[in-house]
Length: 248
Image 1 (spheres, rainbow, N blue to C red):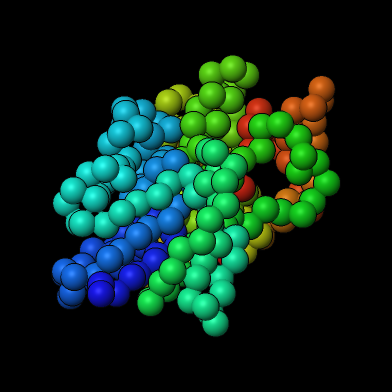
Image 2 (tube, rainbow, N blue to C red; image 1 turned 60 degrees about the vertical axis):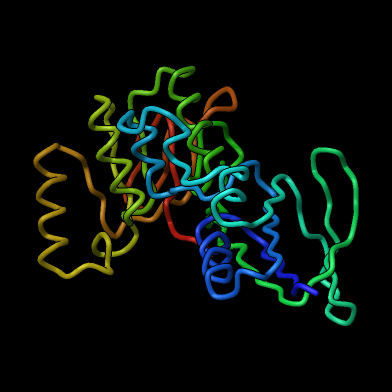
């Protein structure tokens, strides 16, 4: 009897685990369970999708469920969520989100590759329209739609990490003004000081304001939409805000 492997999560880690397991033992019966509609997404490309360098959503994905099964021999269940893990019986309870149906699946090996979620700042005004995170494809689409429908000319980016900087680059390409609010003394702390200096010089060259050691305290708004960021160093107008303060 073939050993059954269930992998919860079908983005980078889940699909990589499935492919590696199949290479190690082609006889394994592997199923990926993913609650979203797509798998194998290149999330690092989202800012460039927003900026137009990636012109088609299909280019963000390495595989579809069908192509992954054909090329990697792995079953993929999208829009399915694992609700419970029973280690005693070696079963997972699964919900088909499209059909609202529950069923169980047996496993010999279970891999949990559910990834992370973006940190959302617990500050007043967070419920306003026009405030986004950028971790999932649906959020990238929502940002593009909001830009089109609301004549966005100025974007406030909270957080000076990789995603924030990639967004700044792409908004500049679109001719949209943006600025960065960063509560630490410098941007992208994981980089060497000389690299951070180069990045700061680029921001200065393109006249992109960088507010260091500045903490977002509240979002202001009118008619249910965000209009600015209130910080401990002053208030800044923004037609749209993207939080890029990390993941958990």
